[in-house]
Image 1 (cartoon, rainbow, N blue to C red):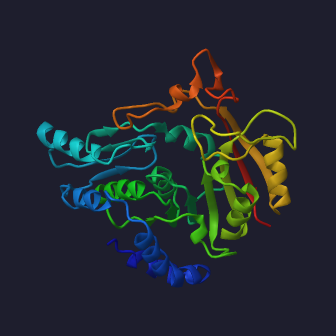
Image 2 (tube, rainbow, N blue to C red):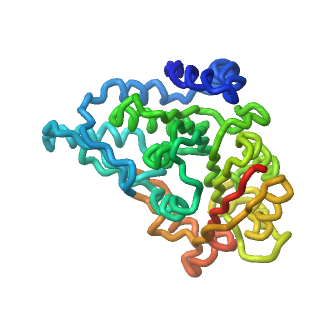
Amino acid sequence: MIDYQTLLEIMRSHEPMQRWASMLPGQLKQRFDDYLHGNLSDWLQIIRALPVIPADHIDLNTGLISVRSSQRISEKQRFELKQQLLKLSPWRKGPYDIHGVHIETEWRSDWKWDRLKDQIAPLTGRKVLDIGCGSGYHCWRMIGAGAELVIGLDPSQLFLAQFLMIRHFFGEHWPVHFIPLGIEALPADLSAFDTVFSMGVLYHRRSPLDHLLELKGALRPDGELVLDTLVIDGAEGESLVPRDRYSKMRNVWFIPTTATLEGWLARCGYNNIRVIDVSVTTVEEQHATEWMQFESLADYLDPKNPEKTVEGYPAPKRVIILANRP
């Protein structure tokens, strides 16, 4: 269905990844055998029918990552292209500009990238894993920052289709790949990546410490973890466990204080732990658009007190924290 031969060849040439390369074909087959999204074949057909337009200028180092062509594109062609791209809605992470079509995503993912890009270890020449990568926006930013290889993991087949659509226009030669699996697909203690990103995943895990240990196992010794997650105000040892939903999300389990999170990382064996940003999420950063017309942050907050969620919990606040595997 989707050709992973190029990625498998890369993984086989890198000794720490060889164990995963031997497992991955079977993992992908099982995933698609067990769960095949009913729309995936239609999405792939849309991608196959897209026009081939020369990618004469690609910009991966500005907030609005974009592709342009010296070939003239008429307004009719641009309108038709937009209608095809809209068929893969909702678009959550971005933004993108595809030959003049601006994909205004729910999240301004570039804001998060701006908060961390100058604080993390330079990505030049590094092998990078992005857990929960969505459509792959940050994966492309990592390539723009000089990464040698980027692998994005996300079980969503819609996000897979969105990534494949972007890659169709950017070109197949970029060393960035999307695997439609969760972190459970990683072999234990793989020790293969220089940098591992986990952004917006930890609070969805029933066992956050197990997630931190899985992330550490993916890192080579002295590799760097870049962790973004929800936090609450409070002292070390405190953590919010929502009774049911948080911001209308059912799958939120643990929201720690920043000090608690630092303690979790230390308990899991990380060192050089440092907080680089704490930011309240605003409706300017997360909002409904033409490309994502469902409820968004404004609908998740108490209309009488935006410092609270509709359930009465503290409104979303996020931390970005770095740590290293010894």
